[in-house]
Image 1 (spheres, helix red, strand yellow):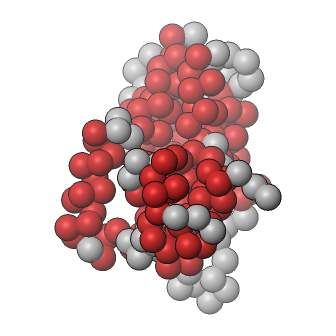
Image 2 (image 1 turned 120 degrees about the horizontal axis):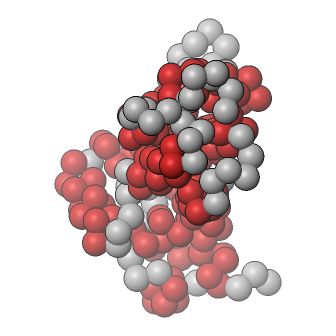
Image 3 (image 1 turned 30 degrees about the vertical axis):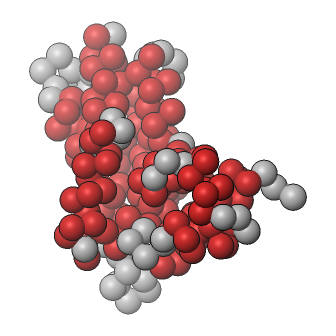
Length: 201
């Protein structure tokens, strides 16, 4: 049998995907995990903490990728790095959007959730700040133009990845742009605006 903490994360992930974050109560999560609510709270002090751990442990690992690139810029070309960032970000938003979307239907719940995120030092703004830090590190190496607005560039790339998560459901096919095409095109287009003069640092 899986450890209780793993069962709780699995149950929370499944319920958040199927009924949304707002309706995935700790009581229902504990029941699906085969444990008591008291056992759930032993591992996760609040539903917000549980939500954050689902994002960290069950979804594509965007934050560790961004932090490692910022810590060691220059390992690969900016185009290769931004392509991988775009790929992981697109997958992250694709999988997290159905979980978090239900928050926007309940104003009071979203306010409480946002306050909990602030207290835990978390939130959806962090990937933008971490990508900005990576781009500034590349800028210091001379591989991104000295006048480039790295915060705006980070916002554009991640905004496009988030947009891909929900903008295509109403199309005739209901299909998103293929990731293997989307990620490199996004990286190349962004670099055309911020890289050094030859465009291929």
